[in-house]
Amino acid sequence: MERRTFKNYLLSIVILFIFLSCSRSNDTIPEEVINNPTAAILSFPENNTECNEGVIINDNKSRVNFQWKASEFTDNYTVVLKNLTTNITLETESKTSTVEIIIDRSASYQWHVISKSEINNETTQSDIWKFYNAGKGKVNYAPFPADIVAPENGNTISQIDDKIILEWNTVDIDNDIKEYEVFFGSENTSKESLGIVNKNKFEVNVASGTKYFWMIKTIDEVGNSSTSDVFNFMVN
Image (tube, rainbow, N blue to C red):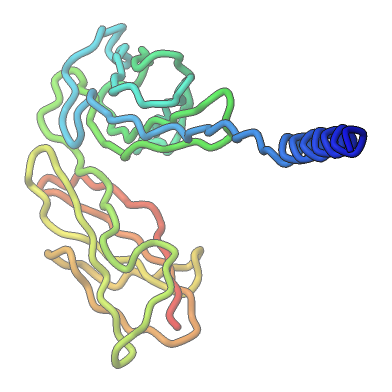
């Protein structure tokens, strides 16, 4: 009887050991959570303003200190700066939330910041801001290029009675925008001028199954002008 009890005891130990071994083998190690970088919040140069701060190098160049609020889960940043007159884009790397860049005076720019992580391939982009870098003796400024409102760039939309309305926004430091010229067509390289308007909306004829391209030329009271990027949409 004692021998049977001892055998039952050994059997119970073996079963418990097997159970514990299986339980441990089925345990999963929690995966480490890797967060994506958050978007930087731009602070200077301010949006849609004239930048008078910076170190003047000569009549044509100045050094401007770009600043933004540091973003979370971020190890480094790329500042993307586009000269809206020449359409030349410059990318500058920074480990901190500020960087000095030498840029042209008397020129309009747009800029944004890309947040990056060393342990994550995902990146996050800030808002896009525009500013005018002040020059020597400048008394009137060209308007900033128009920004799209509708249809959203690259979207597929439905038309009503074969018509849709183009809409855009513009900003001018002098606040003296006079008119707009609308360019529109189904071929990116051969957009037709549809004429001059004095408001930021324009109705155009469209056909289903066609992709359209359009852009806006903004003109102020003294003849300064700027041309937007080329936008596009598809009509279903």
